Length: 224
Image (cartoon, rainbow, N blue to C red; front, side, top):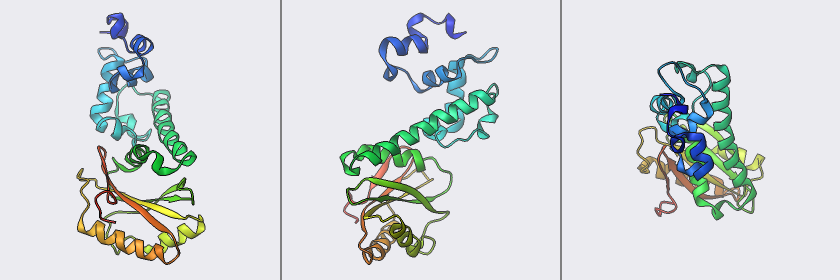
């Protein structure tokens, strides 16, 4: 069935204009970007295929234009549009965090970290460097692979904090396993970095363990 053959109140564009974007599902929003489908597969079905292929919206957020080539019917123009929209989402959250005190919007911090790290296939250790007002200076991905006390080098974190004139940091890493529970190794690493950064008067405010569906604050757990 073509989208134009759907009842008017079920067509994504008309539904959005009448009821707002929150009324649309993920596949419907993607259908608006795709606009057209293939013979035997409308844009709504293609949108659902994208979600199924890449593990939902969170997976799509870390999908590049090359990976999208695996979806039949996605030409260069459509791939570029999808990647551009996903990048805008990441930049919008980063801009929000740079304009206000980080802890005025804790949910924005979680959303930002999930967008950046949650669906990565390998483990990433990142640091949000903050100014004296707890506003975001920049997020940097410093290490990747299996993270232990020996693979995350405190000296490099300290050097970057000094170079950026950061007053404090929020640490973050993802668990590709999908379980956001902090491990004993995560706790030990946090204490090591806290001690190293404390020598140069840079505070560790929190350490988040991130998956595509949640971000657990170690400070809230009393592990900092």
